[in-house]
Amino acid sequence: MCAPEFYTEQARERIASLTAKPRRVSRSPFGDDDEIGMLNLISKESARRVMSRADAGRTFDLAVDLFMGMPSWTKAGDPPFQQWMTHSPSGTVRDDASGFGEAQNRLVGYSGDAVSMYTHTGTHIDTLNHFGYGNEIWNGFTADAQLSSRHWMKCGADKLPPIIGRGVLFDVAALHGVDVLPDNYGIGSDDLRGALERQKVEFRPGDIALIRTGRMQHWPDVNAYIDDSPGLNLDGAQWLARAGAALIGGDNSALEQMPAADPENWQVVHTYLLAEAGVPIMEIVDCEALSEEHVYEFAFVAACLKIRGATGAPIRPLAMPLSS
Image 1 (cartoon, rainbow, N blue to C red):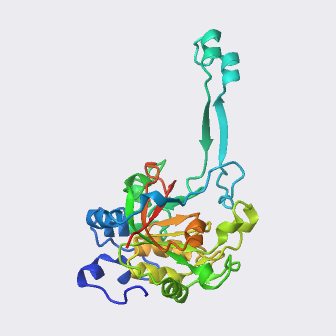
Image 2 (image 1 turned 30 degrees about the horizontal axis):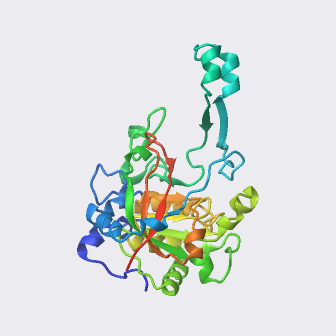
Image 3 (image 1 turned 135 degrees about the vertical axis):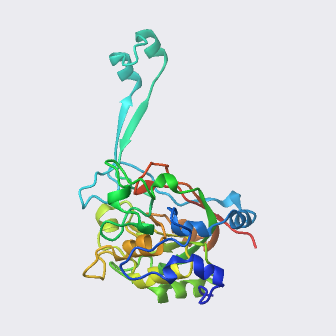
């Protein structure tokens, strides 16, 4: 079963990609103040329906650990994940930073730590201010009017609601009978249709799409995981957006095919999904257990850190199989 090839008039009016113009920022069908795009397709009613069928006793954790030395996007100068102790039991005895004295510090074993990271590290969500065209992002917001000295005033991670919806796995690696798709393989609409037909699953407007390339089998080898990644190409991204995807995630580092096939746009899928289609992106989503257990349809539950104005934030997605 494949994605719907036609829509009710109401659905057509709410899917931005159906009227999007190439390389132009779209205005939201949900109004001038909209900052979350196609996540608006998920309603309270649809969330209740999917959760009423969820088997919480078989919850799949789709997030990776955060740790020093992990694969992350550092090629543009962004910082790797760092973690350090700010307090340790023996150190507290020596430095008495809190001023409670040696006796209390020996009694109370105090440990604390801190982290530093690029907001697009580990399993994370890309918000609609992450990529646009020129000075403009989703819904016509501009850097001149809505970017402060620290962060965007619009479309930040703090605006994203908890996401509860129906998720569908597109196991493209399994479709082609391989553990991992070849380097730089571009996943197009034929791959996505083929995965649904093989799995006998339907994709519907408002669903969350997860794309499995198998790349997670290289985790955490930095070079094998990051470089020349397979992923969605523009054709595949357009097909999912026009089918009404509320959110699209992948098990690779950039969701899209890297390097991109477009010689003029090194982030052709990012700019299309975020600026034209209004579809947020998730990256570094671990789909291996879902694939191993042939779980292709599930309740999806996730919430990101509410970092004000951020272009991305760590997220911990969970998947629960659906009962019939």
